Picture (cartoon, rainbow, N blue to C red):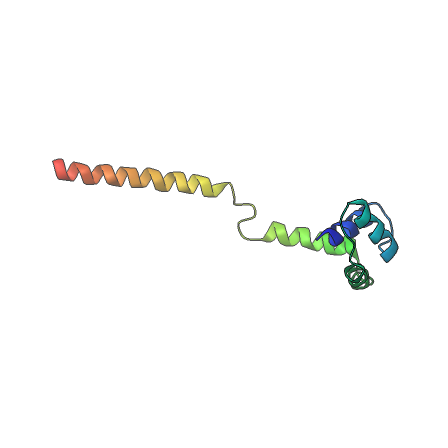
Length: 97
């Protein structure tokens, strides 16, 4: 994962994503560099418009089910608990008339 982070950092800084620069970033982070992984990532990103891919990834995350509805779930749980307590109370009143 550090290789992808390194490539994203280079992109963000406007630097070219090449084997030499990516290797320097990984070394600077203190991680052990695997030259094969560096070569594979640089080759994979050769014809990729990173900015376009980041934009489409952001759209995919925003459109994901539940991505914006996270706040509604705790409210639903509270309502369920409240309903269960009310049902339990009704059940007890039926027992004791």
